[in-house]
Image 1 (cartoon, one colour):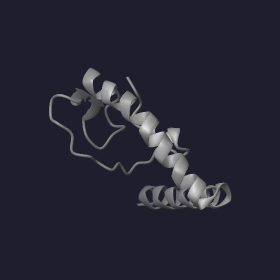
Image 2 (cartoon, one colour):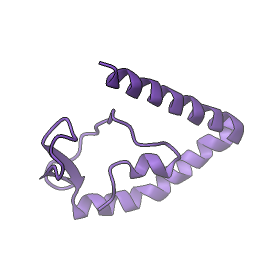
Image 3 (cartoon, rainbow, N blue to C red):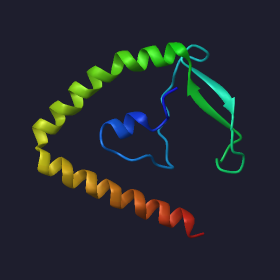
Amino acid sequence: MTHAAAPATAIGLGPTGIVRRTVLVTGSTTETVPESMPGTQSCPYLVRLTAEGERLLRRARPRFRTFAEAVEARLGNERVGGLRDDLAELREAIEAQLNSG
C-alpha cells in the first residue's frame, strides 16, 4: 500500500495535516479502514487505495512526473527551490498555529 503522502513526497513536498480531497469512484479506487492508532487522527478511520486505485496511481505517476518536470523547467530550478522553501515555512507556521491552541 502506498503511504497517503507519497505523491507529495515524490515531488519534494512534505506530508501535511491539511489534505486535499479528490472525488473518487466509491468502492473501486478507495476503501475505508479502521485507524490503527486511535487518538492520532481526527477521525477513527483512514481512506486507502484499493488494488484498482493503486493500479491507476501507477499509471498516473509518469504523466504527473512529466508535468511536474515541465513546470519546473518553465519556472527554473532556483525559483522552484525557493517556492518549496516558502511552502515548508508556511506548513510549519500552520502547524504551529494549530498546535498553539
